[in-house]
Image (cartoon, rainbow, N blue to C red; front, side, top):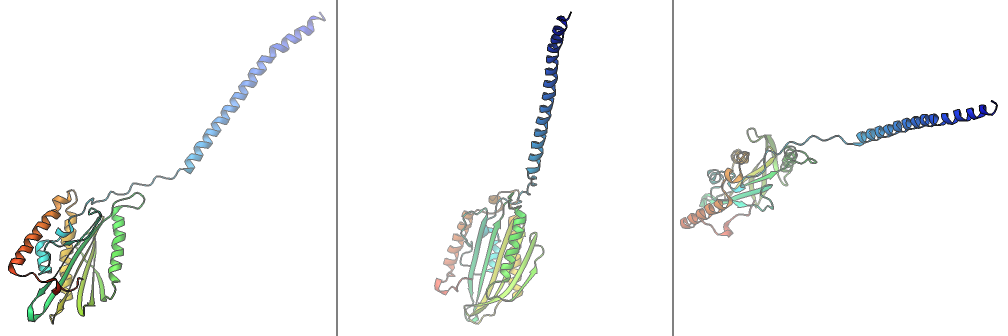
Length: 282
């Protein structure tokens, strides 16, 4: 009996060891699983906190193209504003991308002999802005440029009696800037209309002067002519919405053909003047 008692104690002790190990193992697994979940939760929270909020998409640009600047103003209007234009079809300005920037100008001297001469200059320029996620919508960018162009015209070098006023009925917003400028020893009347339609800025300038004793054109007539031409130019831009520029206006090739025809007519009539007689360009 004395020898069997210790043996029984050892058997019971050995049988208890696996139970303790199992208990310890379960307890350890439970603890590590909890730590993993905590780490995962902490990482997820950190990622959420570090992520930047998504910016809302900018509004798409209304216009994706521009009309041909030299055909943006009706022929009859050009004839009325610049009676003896050297090039009836206008002179196109240089541009690396006509879908973004384009311009055209006309100038001419209407010689009345002993009654003097009348000089006129007309120009139109378009600038289109695309929508950009980092820079903003095309309309917002055009609005910013519109403001800059108005300020620039108001500060024209040498301008006298400068004045600016809203020009209603032309695009989404428009401002007419008028002033007088003395050059080539003559007094010029100027009128510039800066307008915005959607994501396009239109700048139209019209000016004139009397030579050899002829009277200087009235400021009211110059302003009226500038507003009429600006309205037509803006309308041409609006016509490009939902239509290709080729559909909105005749092609540049057609304009050149028309110009050649007009030049031939002038040559036959003997109206063409030597280059030396032309006044300096505005």
